[in-house]
Length: 141
Image (cartoon, rainbow, N blue to C red; front, top):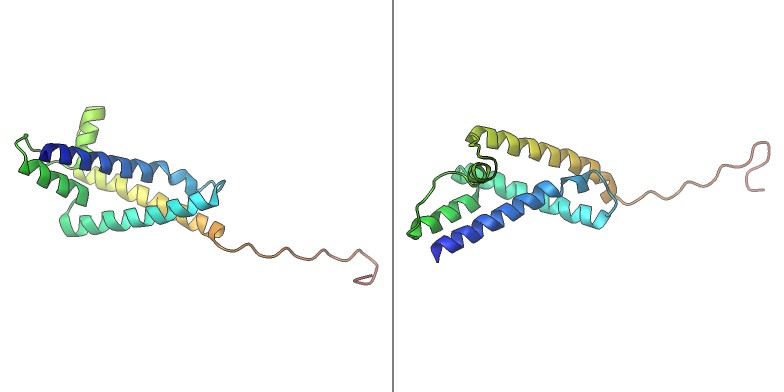
């Protein structure tokens, strides 16, 4: 049971990360303003939770919870970060923790820049300017 819970937490972790990375284009292309706004809020919450857990735990909170579940089960345990385990499984590469942090920080930078660009979308549009009077005649008539 604990191993399945750990796998479910890892799956949730993967889906949350994929949503964060996959939604980044919404910050630059504003075809759907409500979706852009919702993603912007999600990205900010994601980054705050990620950075807070890294500051307090030294890793993502989901990695910590999944590790607790694996240790409570009888399956072999891995103390490796989730992102490193995924890279090993998918690409057969083992990135260093530092490279994972650099990639994460680069994505945070992209999110921040996209958020600043999207800020224009969140503001109320300014009212249209009245037309200029025709040349040579009095205004209004």
